[in-house]
Amino acid sequence: MKFSKVGREGATLLSAVLFAALFTALPPAGAQNYPVKPIRIILSFAGGTEMVGRWLAQNLSAGIGQQVVPDPRVGAGGNIARVAAAKAPPDG
Image (cartoon, helix red, strand yellow):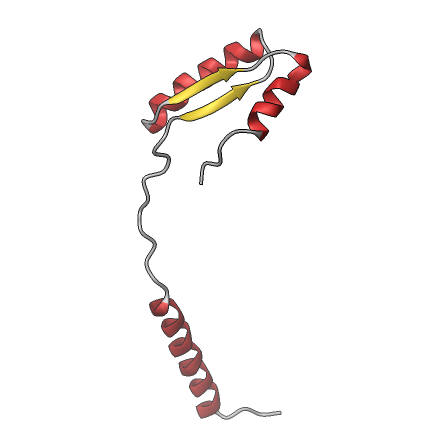
């Protein structure tokens, strides 16, 4: 099947117009100040894991300019931390 030159150019023009119309119709994304509350990292195991978690929270706070709070919930093989994470208020 042969396509005419006008048919190809017309299809290209039509696809370019549709592409431009699609992206001009989208609303711009506004910058949101997230997070507005301190970030909480729940630490489930004591010892070396807690030390690494505190170090991570400190460096993350310095890097993103937002307070990061380590929250140690040790005991019961990590179950206390899992329950705390499950019952945490939603962040959205």
